[in-house]
Image (tube, rainbow, N blue to C red; front, side, top):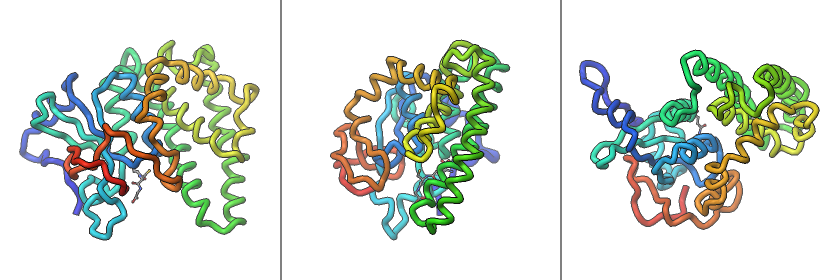
Length: 274
Ligand SMILES: N[C@@H](CCC(=O)N[C@@H](CS)C(=O)NCC(=O)O)C(=O)O
């Protein structure tokens, strides 16, 4: 069993749409106490000035499977969007879908239809490598060393350099101004910034990203790093309480966080399981 979405067959979905469209909606993000794949979602919360809280699963690995079954696809993250009076909550699965929703809502998809689809194409191109890269890194620990060296080698010599080279051309065409489209921060910048961060965190890959090879991408990263709203989020105690990865020892959890009642509401106490 999974948590299926409300029926859209013969039943009106106007009430759900109204919650999603409400500028005064608030949000709960169900995810582990890590940065993981939610960096862009949390950056978008910061950029949009969203009212949001971080929820953790009650016990994700428990054999009862109840946390998994409470999500649409048995994976995290899940975004819960709450109506302004708190009476209705709409759930949304899949990280890229959540990012798109928040980027659209907070104005990070360009100024017009053309810019929206330009941004969409950069996001899609970067997301393809992001997925590929994440799958590769997730299997590294369990893979035979020779297979691992081969896998890393393909990313080192082909996939990552190709992404850098192609995206550098697009960034140069936009004046290498720290943005993919126009002169404004967009989801394209945030997605590439997140991938660049992932690449730079892996020692084997650091040499691929230099001012010579990736000047445009480094400017995108700089623009994100210098954004005051993102800086404020990174300085927050909640952000600092997040681990890099679930393999790291747990940090004390921030008091604003809570366990999910499996319907998008916080239940006290925060607890320690994930
Ligand atoms: N297709 C999903 C994949 C999400 C995903 O892989 N989530 C991982 C955490 S980063 C997860 O839930 N892992 C725990 C599990 O599979 O039990 C998406 O794009 O949101």
